[in-house]
Length: 330
Image (cartoon, rainbow, N blue to C red; front, top):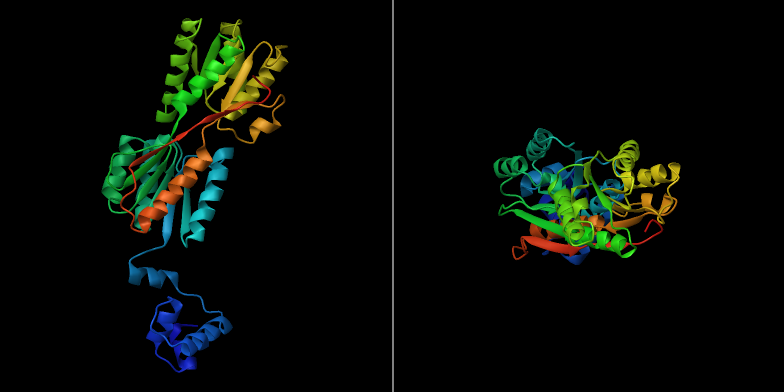
């Protein structure tokens, strides 16, 4: 059923039907009601592809995530997609993986789809390769970043103060007389390096500044969290606190400590980052730094929609503040 069929039934021109479909003014109320009834009766659905060609808009937004299997990324993808859908956009969610060439390829594919906007989740997209790809493939469409920023005229970034957030986590453990603390980082993303900076600053202000060197790099998984915890116990049996950049590894660290007969938090405190559902199912329940990733992503979606609606007065960067959710491991 096309607008021409509807127009024939209503005894009006196709342009009149089009104006009703697009909620344009200048149509008599009785004519509008008649056409709307026919549209409903015939279950008419506008051809979005054709409308996009006319309006030079695809009504599609690309969402880039490195790995949707992580709990916080699943939540982000769901809520952001819902928010953008309410505004009438269809979302293309792409799992890029970590390599820069995969991120660049994803941007290239989305550009071929003629997306109207792009939302990137995670500081791993804050790199030269992604910046160059956006400059080349998507120079004229709005781009929003959650937990990152690129110095381009069409890019807006929403960040969180994770440096001070991690420093506060270390001070919390220090206030419980846990001074010898190790820091576990999964990768050297801009976000994780900010967290490491906060760790080192707080440690150097404490009673055991030598622990600023107790930095371990380990992938984010239950197995690797368990393994690196045992490594730390072997190399530093006097360790009193563990600070992880991800909750999943922190949960397995709690298990490793308990398996070794080490009471948590009496002998060793553990803090994760992201404040995911893992924190509540961990026993004891995991203290975590809530880095506001969901709120940050929703704010990025809001900014993207504002930009798509022509708001050019938005700041290039917005900063949110993290908070500690204290539970049973500190």
